[in-house]
Length: 212
Image (cartoon, rainbow, N blue to C red; front, side):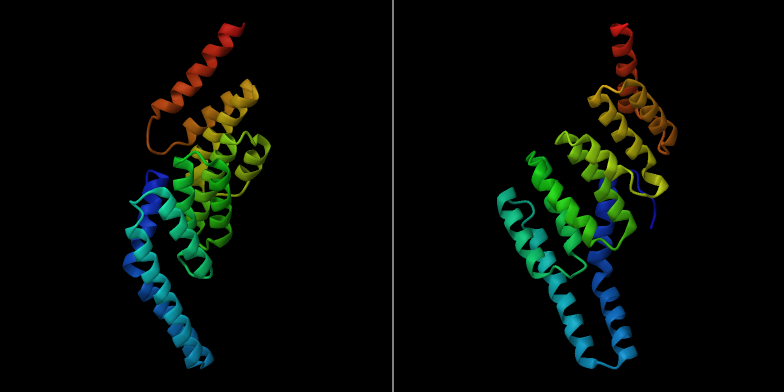
């Protein structure tokens, strides 16, 4: 899968991939497994479960534009009913986004923790991990956020990881560590200059100069 410029593009691309191909992939895997172990009942039952989950997921997405309480209720019901499906992680990510938009950081943290636990895709797990660290930053759980960022992630997330570290160190008043982290984020960026990140670094330098 191509490397996308933003986390949101990555999420949307994976969602679209599963919407377009999920049923065929699941059917192929289940049929192959069923042929291997010779359990036609298992094959048919498992395939039907995944097809039902796919249909339920599509229906749930149709109400995503409604009020957040309705979507949250539908999403939680979906995860409770289809916990073992391939769509549970995507649902947890969507619920976390809704919670964050409502600044319910504790709830967002819970959904992201679930998404990480349920994910079998390294890219999605990395996105959820980075977002979890941002939520923990909002909760002022700085050491917990740093521990989250210590997780081994793909190199394409280095810039995001270092920027969040910079934000954490800034909140902690650790100026030198913050400066190093922001510079590391700039150096790791693969999509060109990041004016917002450069501004953070400049503001930090200005604050240091004013304090001297």
